[in-house]
Length: 165
Image 1 (tube, rainbow, N blue to C red):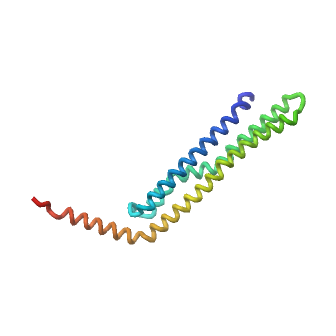
Image 2: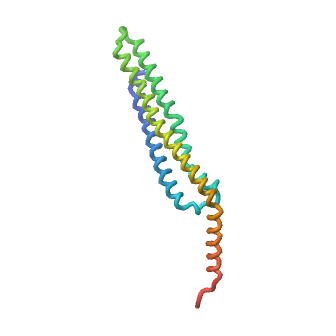
């Protein structure tokens, strides 16, 4: 129990820190990618392929915002268990030690929420951007297809012209 007592805080903080870092990394990556796609919608041949390309890594954000509060809650439960264990081992009950143990245990839940809430906001914002891009693509698809067909025709005609000797 002593090993758990000294290592649980570091483990929970490390897990939540990693989750927060990954959430930030994938959010920035998706924002940059979506900005690039917005300028080049014609590169996609269907709305389904566009949506698939846009939603890469969003599943990871969903997993992080769904599970970060539970990781924090796990830290809280273990912290409370350690506090009760220490109370049982002590011959006299010290209120300040109990309050310190419980406040440290609740710190893990707060940290889980600090990771989850911004990730949820980023996930929903990115989902909205994807929906707008797919909707824009669907409205522009006929014009984009015509332009692509015209470009292929021009390229084909250029290929059919014999080279000057």
